[in-house]
Image (cartoon, rainbow, N blue to C red; front, side, top):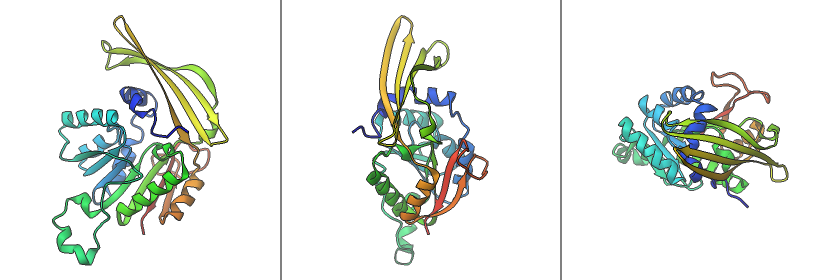
Length: 275
């Protein structure tokens, strides 16, 4: 059985190029606004190349990003250095099912010791899981473990925000469709074409994207093939899992401006809190 983390190392060189043409920066202001009002350090699950982490760091949010993919993190580190944000944003390679952070210290017993700890060592004021990150956890036990870990590292009363890819089962299957084409790193760099196949594995409740990126630079041509798998999770399904994991769901949103969710919405965001 394919694991949800497979394919992301190979995707790293093309991740920003593709997202700039699809999702773009539509969600950045939403996460930035939440993070600025949480009152403390933020943990981003699956930070990738820093698409969300860097704008939050520029806004003054103390942030820790964690990702399993070293090629993704290599690109994020380079961007952090160029932006001079290495003191504001910390990047860690790790598994979100086993977060490498201690739980928040007990307030009374550790008040004096806590004052000397780094901000995130006193627990996180918010954890975010942008755009479908949790749907790459293809097994129920992996999702349950991740939710338990998020709850463990959050401060009491702190927030958890996550986004799901909307209505994956409704994605139409197609084979070898040219989805995108254009220059990477501006004209004079490489020219990239994405040919994509979408498959539905309804028995396993998976949507699978077979990616083929063809890169041309001068007279050279290289082809990169890999697959990305996402698990079907509806907003009510996810809300029930959050409740079971000990969270209180505070909002179901259907856009990045705070509008209410319904099954036809293009954006599926859930906000919750640790009691």
